[in-house]
Every structure is written in C-alpha cells, then in structure tokens.
Image 1 (cartoon, one colour):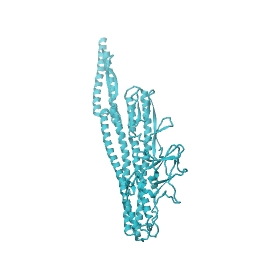
Image 2 (cartoon, rainbow, N blue to C red):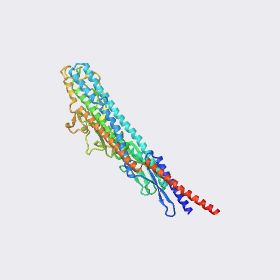
Image 3 (cartoon, rainbow, N blue to C red):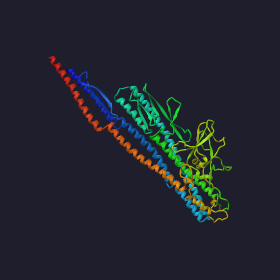
Image 4 (cartoon, helix red, strand yellow):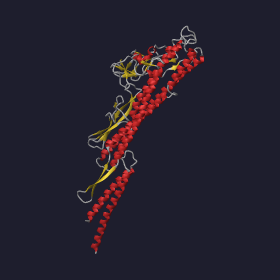
Length: 566
C-alpha cells in the first residue's frame, strides 16, 4: 500500500512539473511573435495506479494561421504599391513640380506676345516660359525615374531577404524531420521558429504551405501561383529550396524580371510576366511598376508632341529678322534627319532597331511601346504593340501608325533568331529634347509679307492650347482619339490620382482585415496571461497536493518502521 501511495505521489509530481513547465513556457513567450500556445494534458495509467503519460500539444489553428499569412501578404502588397504610387501622384499633381502650371504659363505668355508682337520683353517672357516648361519636364522625368530606380533597389533587397528566409525554412524543416515525432516544448518551439520565418516570407510574397504526406509537421512552400520555393522530398523528408533571382527582361532588358533557380542547379525558371508572384512587398513592387512606367510614357508623349507642334507652327511664320521661323526646340532623331542628327538607337533586347519621330504625323505619336519579332534567321518580320499587362497585341501593327519612322536597313534592323526587341519611342525621344534658342526675335509670330507687327502665326500657335493634337493614351486610330495638351495632362493626373486613391483605400482595407484575422488567430492560438496565471496557480496547488501524498507515504513508512522496532 505504501509503495502504491509513493508511486501515485511521484507520478503526480512529475506530471505537475510538466504542466508547470509548459505554462511557464507560455508565459515566457507571451511577447514572442508567432508563438503558439502549448498545453500539456495527462492520461490515465492503465497498467498501474497514479498518473499516466503527459502529452504536450501545440494549439495551432492552421486555417486561421494561413489566413493571417495571406492578409499579411495583402497588406505588404498594398503598402508597397501605395508608397510608390502616392509619391508619383504627388509629383504629377503638385503645381510646383507637375507640368500643368508650366503649360498654362507658356500659353499665357504667348498670348501676351501676340498682343504686342514687336515687344522683345513679351517675347523674352515666352522664351523663358518654354525653358521653364522643359526644366519642369526634365525634373519630373528624373523624379519618376528615381522612383523606378528605388523600386528596382527595393526589389533586389526584398528578393535577398526572401532567399534568406526560404533557406531558413528549408533548414528548419530538415531539423524538424530529423527529430521525428517527439512532441515536446523544444520540438514545438522549433516549429514556431519555422512558422515565424514563413510569416516573414509572407510579408514579401504571397505563399501557400503544403504539408508533407508522411510528416505533416514538415511543410513545403509554394507561390500562390503554384511555383515551388521549398520542396519536400516525400521519401526522405528532406527539403530543397529555390532562389528568387532578379534578371534582365526577356524582351526589355531595362525592365527586370524574376526567376527561380533551385539549389545546386544552374538553370532558372523565369516567372512569366511576373504575375506568377502576387501579394507581399515583392508583388506590390512589381505591380506598381507598370503604372509608374505608364505615367512616364504619358508625360513623355505629351512633351514630344507639344514641342514638335510648336516647332511645326513656328516654322510656318516669320521672325523679327524677317526670316522663316526655325525650330524653338531641339528634338533629336526627327525625320527627315539632318546631317548633324542620327537615328534613335535606344532599344531593349538582343538586336537593333533604329527609329526617328515623324513631325508630319506627330498626332499619331503614342505612349505605347512596340515590340519587334525576328524569325529563325534573325530577320525582323513582325511588329506588335506592347499592351498594359506586358503581353503583345493580337494583331501586328505598323510603326508608322505610332508616329515614328523605322530604319529598315538590314544592317541596323535585326535581332537574335526567334527573339524580340522592344522600343519605347516617347520615353527615349523626350529625354533628349532641349530648348534650341533663347533669342526672342526668333519667335515667328507673323506670316509672310505681313510685317513684324502681325501676329497671325502667333494666334495659330496659341490655338495649340485647345487644339486636339495628342492621343489621350493608347494608339491612334482616328482624329476622334485626339485631345488638347491641357486635357491630356489633366487626364494623366486624374487617372494616376484615381490609382493612388484606390491604392489608399485598398491599404486601409488590408490593414483592417489583417487586424481582424490576427485577433481571431490570437484568440484561438495565442497566449492569454490571465488564463495561464490561473493554470499556474492550479498546477502549483496540484503539485503541493501530490507532494503531500509523498510526504504521507514517507510518514506512514516511518511509523511502520518505528512499530516494528518496538
């Protein structure tokens, strides 16, 4: 009987020690990110008296946990998008940075010059305003390019962080698989550390976990699109992992793409048009880049079109020297090329495409990019418009319908066999435009034979402010697609403003959703200090009671020994 009492007391003390250790571990980790509450439970001893084995459980609600990871990825996506979109929106809409006020000032000062055509001061004011417009454009161009450069830098940094986490998850998996089915606090803490790495990875990219069939504690990691990042070998419970790499674009080497290369392999798999990576900071950086590039293309198209129209109109009048008007802006790569000019050679891809803007069809100049496709000999045989999502138009297009002339000399018009070369006419033409003259007398306001006090050509130039002369985004199909320069810029800022507003709304919604899912998950799997404190008191009382059983058995044994010695 005494031995049975002692056995009961010892098993109860041992069990309460485990319960107290588990509770203490919960309290110690209450502030640890992604720590999952553990609970130890006792079982009956079917073979003898006393407490049976003690099983420690990890109270993880995997459904709610994965919901938190998805919402984390969604919030990080929207934060990355809003940060960069909001910055560009401020550049476009700010009167001291954007183009709206400088366009207005050009036409206001031109109107003043028309009112007094022989006044050099009024003419000088106009010449100053066109220089101000170009300064403003160049600053805006550089500002937007700096956002794109920042985007690329953050993309490089984020993929580096992602790769470190992917490797860490694979290593944790291997350690978990090596331990096997030993479910104790150390084992569960290892899983918590692995899941913390998964949570950090979810902040960078939208992922899905795939439990291993033989050991559900070991999980593979896939992109939301299905591409593997951490691959579990089902027979060995060992993990291999991929590296996300930033590589030059397949068709546009100035635009970076992502690819995955698995450990030990020199081959990498390009992630299509980058839409295979969604969610997370990386997905947000990729997504907003398209909108930012579109904004840069749009203001470039407007600037090229505006300056070419001013040149065309000025060349139809006569200046104060009595000479035929000349170009006010120096626009390189204008067709037909003069001896001091050359074709624009900016192209992106493995090949050569030379082109020039055609002032005679400047209304057709688009903010679209064009892609040239070669055959198996390297000869370029087709041209397509690059659509907003990065795909190519269903039908082939003619570059002339986009306001440019292409040099089709085979010596300069080629690509690697069965590949593509992209050009960005508006962006690459606009960056080189400069004011050609500061001589106010070269402003050609009069028409032939009308004398210096005539302003007939100046009035025609003023009408450019409201004349439908530029496509309102997309390709030209008819004059119905044309709008004025002021309307075009307003459309650019309004469209981008709507994108920024939607990004802000999405960000706020994502913040609320993550807060809700975190709260739900914490209620199921988090640590409650009040609950753990109550358990601590309870288990201490149980421990004391168990210790008294041992004490009682010892006292009884001593009493028996005393009785036998009499």
